[in-house]
Image (cartoon, protein in one colour):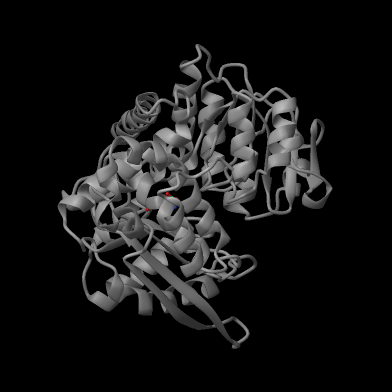
Length: 451
Ligand code: GLU
């Protein structure tokens, strides 16, 4: 890892001490503090009033019991979380994640990242994140509904369109958001459309929200490729994951002429030398909710499945890598393989998918690297557009919404690029994103006093 400015080291030490056993949170804070050395050297006033210490401490953390009854009549207990990280720029905003790996440290890292990501969008949204260690895999529709209702029976009192606005993340899509919003509406006796985003169109959702994260990452990487006079056209691309982010990344990259040759889920990955058939993938993942090996089976010749314990998707040679599954899915070793195979650009669709060792390897090798908090901000940016439509009781067309998304992504790209230049680190999008996001949050916090 790069070193942290000595004035900032005590801040990291204190974060590590006070948040013991939360390595992902430490990792996310470490990365941001690494970038802030150049900021405090230029503007030492950011060291005043414990501003950076306050940015690293969530405003509020809620942990609660979620009891629910499964289809066999057995009582199940899960743990629910909502970390309301920072509201200097607007209501807390960020998704809910349902996955067995969820714990308070994971939600804290996600909430911390979200704060800077949301600031980068330029929209009036603070940062938050939530979720549960509930595993949706293999659960019936009725079980999912009862779980979501029980979760919301507690969480509703902490939410509000001006207070905290959740959305989806891993394990939480349109179905779960519908059940949670339905229970919120019932408990509050209020149709408060702006309290949730990622809603279906039928009850106040926004067009292009489902596509937004993947499309946004593609726009970002395309802008990054353009800075070196190239584009997606004719490039071999590997996208990890096969959820919402991955699927719409594949769709947009294909429309730009990129050739997607591999994607994955937690069971393993598929390589398709003839290019991934997106309609087949959508049918398997969105309609039938099957494992990725089904793709290779139904696709036949040219496609094969490799189980997760037999290899890594990053062994597949490509020009552009777009990790869109989960945190720390791309290690230093994977980065070395990708570099050896000639990768020229990486765009993070997931949150913190590359380990610090991987990021350093890419940067040292001169590979263009787009960090998640900038490159995957299209999802939450479109959530903010959904809030805007709800507030004005309006509904925009797909084209109108996508055009706004494209403009926002271009703005994020340019602000990261220019900030990196301004701070003497040209081409370093990690530094650009961290600094540009930090400055926006820090300026607002300074004006609001010590709160
Ligand atoms: N979970 C998404 C993210 O990581 C979306 C959050 C939102 O739309 O509020 O940014």
